[in-house]
Image 1 (cartoon, protein in one colour):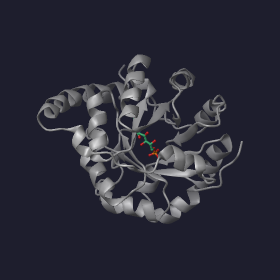
Image 2 (spheres, protein in one colour; image 1 turned 135 degrees about the vertical axis):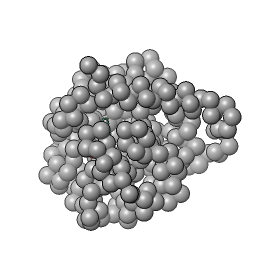
Image 3 (cartoon, rainbow, N blue to C red; image 1 turned 45 degrees about the horizontal axis):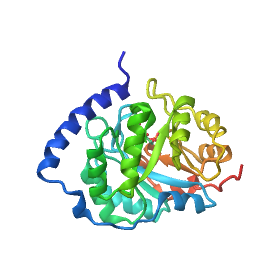
Image 4 (tube, protein in one colour; image 1 turned 90 degrees about the vertical axis):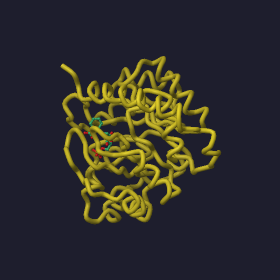
Length: 264
Ligand SMILES: O=C(O)c1ccccc1NCC(=O)[C@H](O)[C@H](O)COP(=O)(O)O
C-alpha cells in the first residue's frame, strides 16, 4: 500500500515537470544576487536555550485544516517578536495548502533564518526556494537514494544554502552521518501511521557523537514538558507547527518552549 510520502512524492514529480518548463521561460537564479543572512547553524549552536523553528502550516495530511486563513506576514512577525530563532514555511500546496509566495512574503517581513519546508526531489525546487528568499532547505532521507541526496545536498551547499537533513530511523541517520551533514532533523512523526513518538529523538540522538552537529527535534512538540524532554535528550532546537498555528497567544507559547538547553 502507498504511504502518504509515496503519494506526496508522486505529486512532486508532476510539479517538478511543470517547474522545469516554467524555468526555461522565466527563472534566473543569477538575478537573485548574493545576500548574507544569519546562519541557522551558527544561531542554534551558539544559543544556551532550546532554539525554536516556528512553522507556518495551514493544513497537513495528518490533521487536515489547521489554520487556513493565516496571513504569513503577520504570523512571521509574531514569531519574530516572540523570539523564534528561525521560521519554516510549508510551501507544498496539494497536501499542506502552502505556497512559494508564502515564503516570499515571510522573507519580506523578517531577517531570521528561513526554511523552505517542502519535499525536494530536484534542483529546480532548490533554485525556486533560493529565489523566494530561503536560506535553508529540507532534504528528507526517506524520499531519495543516498546518491541523489548527496547530489542535492552539494547543489544546495554550492548555492550558499544550508540543509536541514531529516531522518526518521537508524538507517537514515547513517546516511546523514556518511554525508557529513551539519544540521540533522529527527522527525518524531511516523509517516506511515502519523503516530508521534518523542523517544525517536532520544533514541537517534544518542548515536550522534559529534558535538559540532546541530540536532533539531521535529513534530509533535506541544508543551514545555515536551521541549524539556528533547532538550534533555540533547537537541539544540525544535521545529513546531501545529501548536503555534493553533495558539491564541503565540508569544507566550514560544516563551514556554524556549527552555534552557541541557548540556548532555
Ligand atoms: O504534519 C504532517 O501531517 C505530515 C505528514 C506527512 C509528511 C510531513 C508532515 N509534516 C511535516 C513536518 O515535518 C511538520 O510540519 C513539522 O515537523 C511540524 O510538526 P508539528 O509541530 O507536529 O505540526
